[in-house]
Amino acid sequence: MILGVIGTTILIYGPVQVGNKKLDVHTLVYTSGSILLGFQFISFYIFSRAYAAIHGLWPGQEKFLYRFHKFFNLEKGILLGFVLFIAGLLLMVKSFLYWQQTRFGNLDPVVVLRWVIPSVVLLVLGVQVIVSFFYLSFLTIKSRK
Image 1 (spheres, rainbow, N blue to C red):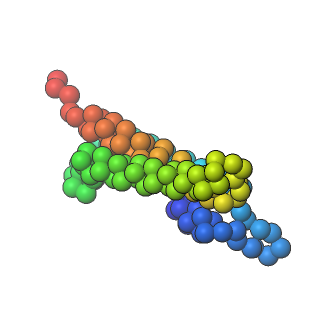
Image 2 (image 1 turned 60 degrees about the horizontal axis):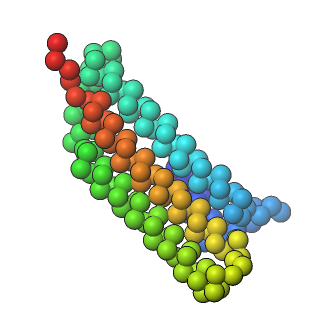
């Protein structure tokens, strides 16, 4: 995920020459996809660890849950997801305004994809963060027995 964030951040500003190879929007698609994939892996790790801690399957994990909830709670997760989603919407508006400048004609795909790809990633990631924090909050509710 970290390499995806670094690669995406670099490629948003333009192509990168590595030796005699040029990394461009095609690579941007893959680095952006790795951000989403990395988030899925991190979420699965946290969900699994929380489940194991709540149900006593992994002794000594109460400290993990306490620290995690100290820094990350449902409200912060919703706020983070909302901020990511809004950033995605802003990039979407930027690409729409660029299209409007061309009088809704043909677009330069290389230019537009530098805004559209990160926009989609931010929109999806924002929703994933919100849903993940809701799921985590349900997952960490202890059942009565």
